[in-house]
Image 1 (cartoon, helix red, strand yellow):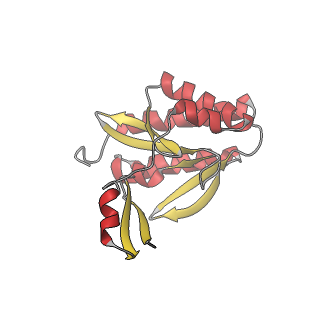
Image 2 (image 1 turned 90 degrees about the vertical axis):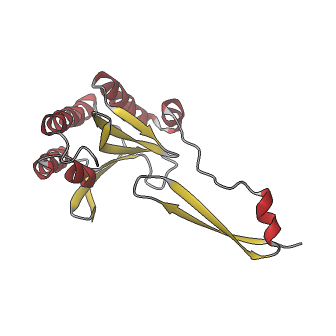
Image 3 (image 1 turned 180 degrees about the horizontal axis):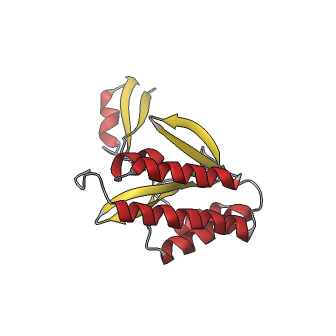
Length: 188
C-alpha cells in the first residue's frame, strides 16, 4: 500500500506549536494508528549550553548567571528560550535566545512588541532598550514586527567580558524599568 500524508505546521501567538495532518493518498484508517497530537520536545539549559560553540557558551553562561541573580524567568522551547520579567505571574519577555541548530543560528533577539503591548510606558522603555543596545555595536535592527523595532545579536565571534557585561547592564536597567512601570492591564 502507498500512503501520502500531508502535514502542516503552525505556531500560535502564545508560542504553542500545532501540526495538522491529512491523508492525501491511501486509506483513512492509517490515521488511527498515529498519535492525536504532537509537539516538539523542549530543551533545557544543559542541552542548550552543550549545543553552543565557545563564543556562544561564554555569552549565554554569563546571561544565565545574570538571570539567576536577578530572578528572571526562563521559558524553554525546542530550540531556545525566552528570558522574562515576572510581574505577579505575568511574564514580559526581555529577549529570546537561540541555539546554533535553530533557523536563527546562535543569537539573541529582543521581544520589544510584547514590552510595548504589556507594560505601562512601554514605548519609552523600548526606545531606551533599542538605543542602548544599538550603541553597543553588535546588535542590528531586524524587520519590524508590527510597530516595534527589534534587534538581533548574532554571536559568531568572541566577545570580551566587558562587552558582555555592558549588555547585561542594559538588561538589568530594562528589567528594573519594567518592574517599576508594571503592567498596562494585568489580565493580559
